[in-house]
Length: 137
Image (cartoon, rainbow, N blue to C red; front, side, top):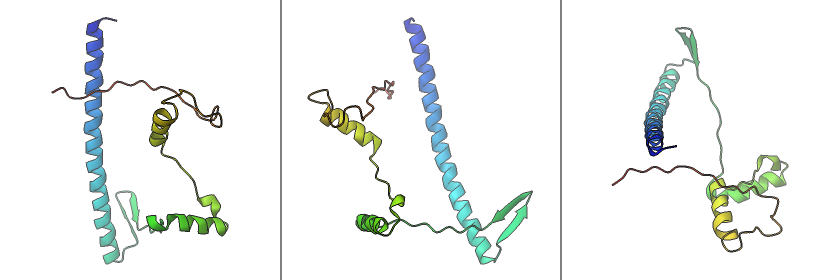
């Protein structure tokens, strides 16, 4: 492959990334508009005591869901209560994938390039190659 081909592919790559960024910004704005419009519509339906209506072949209806999450300072206590009272299957222990990868790379593999024996064969480690792009100064 010659340098011209690389430059053409790099230009296409940058254009695609720029388009993706623009679409993501547009999507974010659209999601906010949808959220605000839904909020106003639901308030109007409640104020006018309308549970549902049909317009142009679409049925619009009020839908109420209860959402709950423990306050951060009580998370451990709430999780323990769930476990103690037979609801332990609701509790999941997770580790952030990026933080875990950084820990493995910078802490465990930094000096020896080998995992501790207890972890060998239990962790999938691979290199991911990508192309970074930034605006030149």
